Image (cartoon, rainbow, N blue to C red; front, side, top):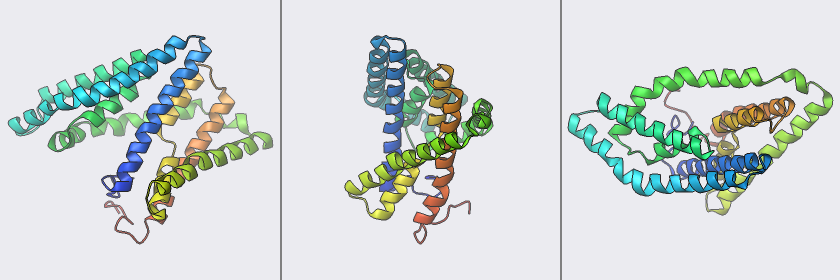
Length: 257
């Protein structure tokens, strides 16, 4: 939504992206702590959090300057070559493997490396060459999540009531809280509410964590189903809310529209 509406590089768009990045990183660290408590081994949490912080610092202060070689190579060759793309993907896979070995899982490593990679022509060409993979593979993950979701497990008045309460708490705890935090940070009400709507949408990371929790036995299939419903509801809320909040601004419609 941010890129389609042209707000990714605005002040509140950048703030929303940064907040979401921190939110995801914190979620992975909390998951590591939960897994450690279940295994009665604090070393798992220390290793995961310490390794994650070290990885982020290494990516920012060492990786980011080193990755400028990709920009220079792309400019020198008049575009990205198969060798440059292969090297970038190898670095990406190493980062994903490293964080997975730390216990924070591969996606966090890939995400941090993506933020450290140079922008401009190199990033645009990598996106053009690899975006089709996301288009093909991402729906497969949602199918996997759907197969794990058993709506029938929550088909009682009590469980539907619990689901409603969880959805309400989720909206209050993230959407409303982030809106108030953005307002406190100096944004106007419209932009603060937009940030709240964007942050309220539980996306891919939350579904991944839910699947990990189910796999590790942290949550039951019934709770998994309730949490997936909460994630879907908050995801579906985001687009119409953002469209309503941006109505009357230059971002009211996306380029595709």
